[in-house]
Amino acid sequence: MQRRSFTCFALAGALFAFLATAEAAETIRQWQFARKGDGLELALRDVAAPTPAAHEVAVRVRAVSLNRRDLMMVAGNYGGGTQPNTVPLSDGAGEVIAVGSAVTRFKVGDRVAGIFFEDWLDGAPTAASLATARGGNSGGMLSEVVVTDAEGLVSIPQHLSYEEAATLPCAGVTAWVGLFKRGGLTRGDFVLLEGTGGVSVFGLQLAAAAGAKPIITSSSDAKLARARELGAFGTVNYRSNPEWQQQVRALTGGAGVDQVLEVGGQDTLPRALQALAFGGHVAIIGGLSGFASDVPVGTLMGLNATASGIYVGSRSDFEALNAFLSEHQIKPIVDKVFEMEDAPAAFAAMDDGEFFGKVVIRL
Ligand SMILES: NC(=O)c1ccc[n+]([C@@H]2O[C@H](COP(=O)([O-])OP(=O)(O)OC[C@H]3O[C@@H](n4cnc5c(N)ncnc54)[C@H](OP(=O)(O)O)[C@@H]3O)[C@@H](O)[C@H]2O)c1
Image (tube, rainbow, N blue to C red; front, side, top):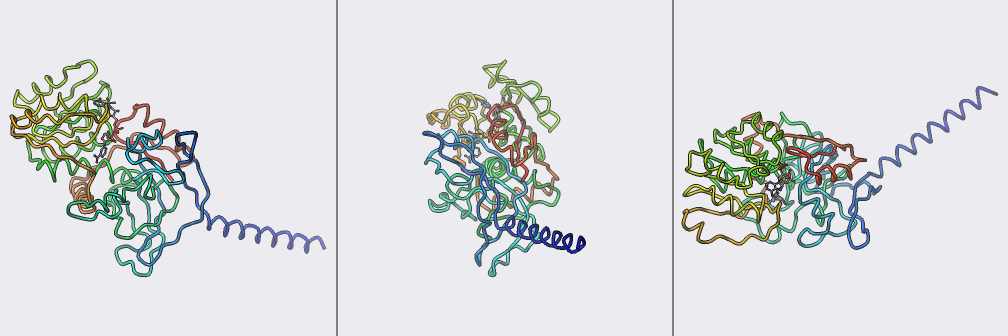
């Protein structure tokens, strides 16, 4: 009698465990932007597990990284507005767990990352392809599973972990495009990088690997010491040296820098131009101090300089970056890693500026 009731109990337990597993498999967790007063906050929600259509792939996301843009979205000051109930973050990497019947690009088990603009594959962008930026309005990556068109993924370099690969889609591609595709960087070029955030530290690593001479600024001497370990040719503290552009120029022997990744915006652009060499190139990328810069027409003409507007890049740019990273065995700098449940703390860490390179969340 006692044995029979034990057996029934065990069977009921097994059934319960099976049902619980089946139920768990049908839902996934994802963070979403949620309405809070006039603004937005982050909310962790259970949603139905997505399944891929014929041309789509399901990715078990293992890591995501943050960009300045993501903070602007929560704060409600990112251009175009951010819709509630959408998933944050453009950047993520993981493994393929299911493919649609028409997919040949990937198979289950492949290690992949999402491209920043899901539909910008090659060549110049279009209005339509630029409308497919992930995170915010087009589905973001801060989700245990993401289903996406198979064309909107790239394979990640073998030598990178998921945490490292998750840093590539926005900051890595932007630095690559600014320096190589648009800037035509060559060995020996002096390169100016502003601050030690995601784009600039990628710029430092890429420039150093290409035999260029990166000069980087920071508000922190400790961060500048880390930058020297990564191959910085010169470093300048922009807080203790408000006229930092003079020191940058002096570091080039007076000739000026050949390349700038301009991420600072209205406070830095005029100074960066004072440090620019004749024939130099400025990649116009960011507005950490605000975007309200005037185009300095006379200065650009006088220097015979080129300024390029950069908006991340295409899938083929991402693939070119990956080939370069593999060739030079470059590992992105992941400074802080948070668990999925602690996503708001990752946003706060990005906001306080006490990081070097990238902030990542593990899923
Ligand atoms: N156009 C595009 O496609 C594109 C792509 C990516 C990013 N962006 C933009 O580019 C900018 C940089 O992005 P990110 O993701 O690299 O930023 P990030 O990682 O958040 O960079 C933050 C760091 O920038 C430095 N910084 C802040 N204000 C500065 C200033 N006034 N002058 C010099 N350095 C300053 C600080 O470095 P220290 O602590 O060392 O002082 C800070 O820690 C943002 O405006 C972002 O929106 C644009």
